[in-house]
Image 1 (cartoon, helix red, strand yellow):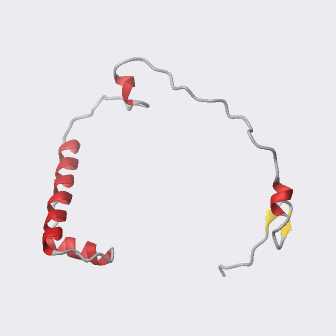
Image 2 (cartoon, rainbow, N blue to C red):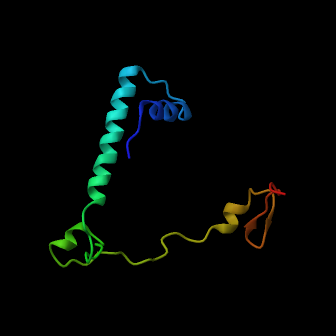
Image 3 (cartoon, rainbow, N blue to C red):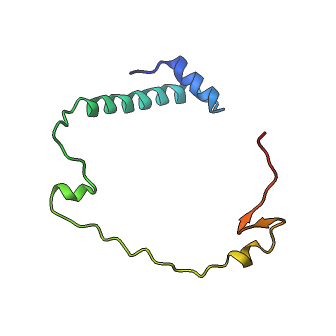
Length: 99
């Protein structure tokens, strides 16, 4: 896939960017370079390669250090909802905005 100068102009227009001609040409070469890199990566045969959870796992057997999932703050729901205009069953009530 390769972009043209008109594609860059359209993208810049959609992003509300005003690019000078030099900037537009530089952007075109950079984006097309990115697409070339993606195409080269797609061409690599990865059949039979297991996905890695961590890049170092390809070199050595590692275990991820995960912390325990523990509560670190008290439940302050009632105090936090005191300033709300309307609350019911622990939930904030808001006006209907979608019909």
